[in-house]
Image 1 (tube, rainbow, N blue to C red):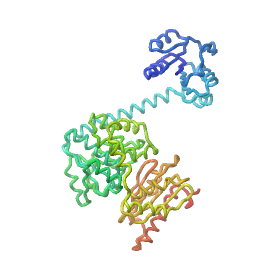
Image 2: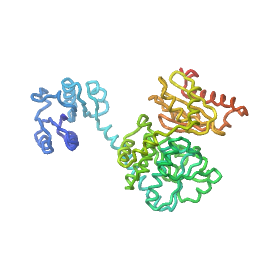
Image 3: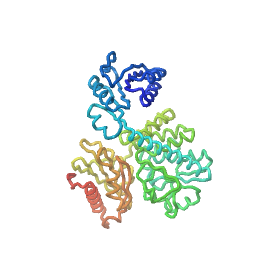
Image 4: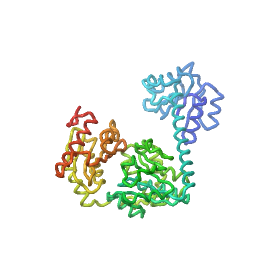
Amino acid sequence: MSLIFGAGKIGYAVSLVLKKRGKEVVVIDKNMQALNRAETIGCKTYLFDFTKSFNLIGLNISKFKEIIITTSDHKVNIEALKISRELNKEALIIVNAPSSEHISGLKKLGADFVVTPDRSMAQIIINQLELSSYWRNKDLLRKMLEKSKSLAIVMHDNPDPDAMSSSYALKAIAESMKVNSDIYYGGEIGHEGNKMMVELLKWDFKKITEHKKYILREYDLIALIDMPNLSNTTIFPSELKPDIIIDHHYTEEEKINAEFTDIRPKVGATATIMTSYLRDFGIEVNEQLATGLMYGILVDTNNFKRNFEKEDTEAVYYLKPKINKELLNIIENPNISSITLDVLSKAINNKKIYDKYVISNVGYVETKESLSQSADLLLKLEGITVSLVIGIIEDHVFVSARSRDQVIDISKIIIKAFSKMGSAGGHMNFAAAKISIGAFSYTEDREILVKIVGDKITENFFKTLKLNSKGSM
């Protein structure tokens, strides 16, 4: 049950929304005409002049779960807040105030939320700006696809569920507009779950080597999906400029200057962004694509234990009735290969704990995914808030980082620490870097090289955090 002080424009608008949601609403005001309008939408009303008395006879304030104070008289709002909080310690109380300078004082008096015209208007403008930008983007994407006959979609070299499902979503959008599209990558799909995902969902990706990247020149449009920067792919021709960039990571999009960009670092997954386009283009999402997009969102938000936004939950609710639950369960619980198990074992045995940080140098490995799996595993250690796993694949060093520290944005740390040595990117709770072996002292002794790499990565990481090698200030 909700109690509203004031039946003016704000009070009436709030009452109308609450009634539409099926809530019981009681409205208090001194204006009979305003109360009559509230009664027409089903509200119970009390005629009362706040300026003369606050002895609210016959009204049990303690029974209301929500109290919303909306009058235009600030002094009345203060008195209403005081008596409401005195008589009801548990209710959620929202108060209208003339400006932001009153927020602190009203919260000290017991308000849970304070609404001010300047803050409300700013939020309205921001919301409208984001909404308008999205619809403009949608129209631009449609126009670009309608004018084209072919589209190449490029994923990063070791595509994950978010990249793969998002790419397939763009392929579905393009083909609904009669645009022939192909999805390319240049590395390996290494994680067992990712391999199983591709197999079970019957997805067709084209793996090409760096020597065959010239075929991308034959397409009318090229899209980069879920790719923070161009250094994450070996198959993108340096002389070409991508036409479309869609991602949820911090990105180099300003340097690339594509015609179409949709970059949303706050959103948990690129699959979320692509789900919104599928929905708003009115494209039917089949069971395979829905299941893949759902898995992409779950992986990149770590089952909603990492950063996520309202858009992510909306995407999940949209996809939920369309997915194949049995397939999703199989993909989520793949068998672990002996190779991956060996890397996990190395990560545990080689771990070094510095206060709340754990770093493990696993040396030479076969797949980048085994490093991210190791970082996930080490983050589960008691007392640990940040994990860092270092590995070497052929002639590159890879760093995989995870964080559950609410203060540290791990992507910014990794970018600052390693972007000058190679490439780096990520999100608030997970990040990665790729560095050429050439950045380190040359040696033919693999064991010495592994040690040099581990020491340098650890030193740079703690230096960026402004901590010493023991993880302390």
